[in-house]
Image (cartoon, rainbow, N blue to C red; front, top):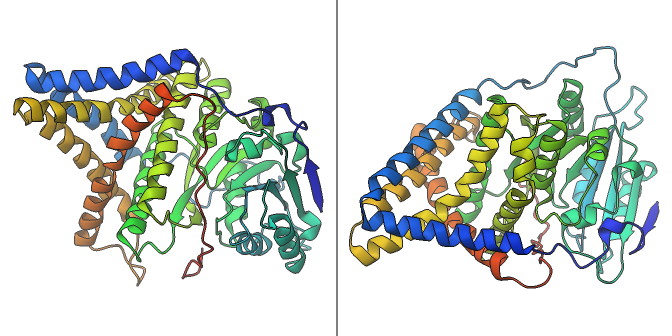
Length: 464
């Protein structure tokens, strides 16, 4: 089946994309300049010790609860439903795709293999693919694959087309707002996602156990083929530990793009998808937190696999976009979240502390510049060391989830080596965040969305 979304069909999908208010430009420039100045001044004067001590104190105070809480989540793996007599929720799988013929047939096959069905085999899910102005035959490939796997009766392709439409995943999702979906839960997957046959059943189980918003653990396949792919895989595991710990400790945990699941009623309550969101996952996280007091359950046993970013150039564009999206989210939604009466004081404080980490890269670069200018390296070395050690400790702890080829836990030496790699890899944010602040402050015109290319790689191992 195929629907068509005209350019004027949804007001939020019309226009030239998000613009940058003057106040945001000033705030971005002030954050960048102020951070650089404070870091440089600390290196040159007596304030260095206080800056270093405060940084270490903040890191320890923030990291310790996360490491402890991640081991005792509010909802355990394989959760039991709150109402054992209620049928499991139905699910709408929503995929935004632009020129994705290389990867979509495999995803359609994975959806068709799902065991989330009635006793007679009827799917308790539907699949909607948004063909976002593709020119490679994406719609036809999806229709053919759905027919071949016998799920064409529960599959729709919505064509988004027209001149002057904003780019990006969030903008594409506006073509299918909550009222166009039939499922109780809306699950968003990337076009290159690969999932195991029990994925939708696990999503339904978490929702039935009381989670109105759930995010999957993002996994990178072919992580053993290159340093870059392996670093991305361990970074996702590291970030998962952080978000799981934030959720379990009562913090303001967030969605992570691929594998985002939310009750349809909650998504409608907060206004659906927004074309203005450069990073639709954390934009939605902040809106459900501020307006409904909902934080995101982080499910370790819900795995969404995806391709690694193949080149350093593509990685830079991705991280620059992610950084700018985080900054824009903070400027737009930071106030409503920290003032929300729906959230606990712990969640609001957690959000503020998590947002404040965007100050770290300008401070570190400023301190480094000050060290070069004055020859006093104590502050710069201490700040860089704190940043890298914190990332390494978090990664080392998170890698307890990983297993070797025989299914056994990783040896301590391998965990340590990979933790060091993850810490070093995190240095990309020391450049990406200041770069995003500068770009946000100085860009003219609409925000540009840099789409990552997908190659259609096979996972190389069964996807669980």
